Image 1 (cartoon, helix red, strand yellow):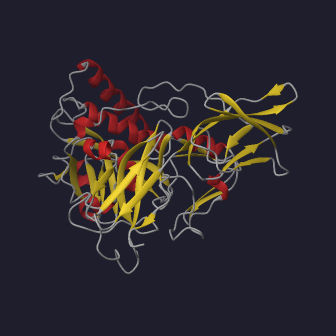
Image 2: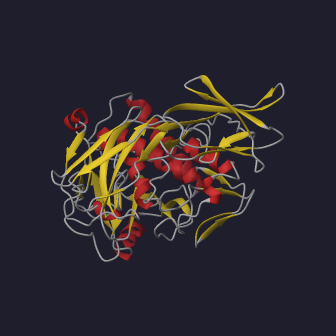
Length: 436
């Protein structure tokens, strides 16, 4: 199997390199005879980033009831955790850099915060960062709004593939059932027309994983057994952005670049993390350092003492770019960096409007969900979650279709979240109850 995967990646890469930049958006995703589109190739690499990411916990990390990581034990594949309440999905909201530096920091929120407990509102996952099956597909396909599995059959940018078999499947197709979603990342087409091995990637409770089915017959049986349908993302040609994560994982012909962690100081969310105005920022300090220099927008902002827990706690920081280093006499550590994002959100229920603004981030989309992050169910996807248009961004508000009643017995009243983006990731406002 390993030999197959290595050769398969090489074949795909060789095919793309031979084509130069002339990628055909409607090309069939064949490995041996035909080229695949740039969008499909990017989706493959992004999915492999998640499945191949090295995981080594620095403290005991229980992410859900199926998976606990022991300190120092090597693993592979991004951790599984449903973060829909706090919107800290890796790849979508949080960078791999921030996640990996939080994983390296034994005092980070990844270890200390339990999102299945109060003050949070219910999930069977415990880890502050992670992704789920729909998050992997969202990241791989380059979507702005994080998918829910239930969105796929109704979304106008997905289409049901006519040939629901191995003969009809292509690279970057989605395999869907009511409770799960996966991404096809390789299809081997033999010279005689037979379908060989088919690879797919998924995020399950034990982490992000690559799977391989031996041939077309095995794939067809898999579809029937799992009650899966094949969907195709119609706008795959838009998936042209890909950033190699060479500092942590190298996939499909990339070369990994060594990365040096900062073992002296790090924020409790990881390096290059995002906070919103009014949120407490904690700097975790290690070693004998007793003071910390804090810079705001490259200017020395203040010098503070390290407390008895080897932390620095910062409250009510104004928005801006920050960096800090630990100090001991003439010794200086490397910097840890973070941003405080200005977020302003108001609602006008009488006019069905959401108002939004930020001095240092870009509003991207809004959504309605209950306090635990569950979106209302509807037959038209993104009535209750939609990207802002250029006109809405110019006006600073969006007129929306709002839920007229609680979203269900289990979910309760709808709350408004606006997602803001900066170069470090995405943040949300403190959710606002639409009916209050």
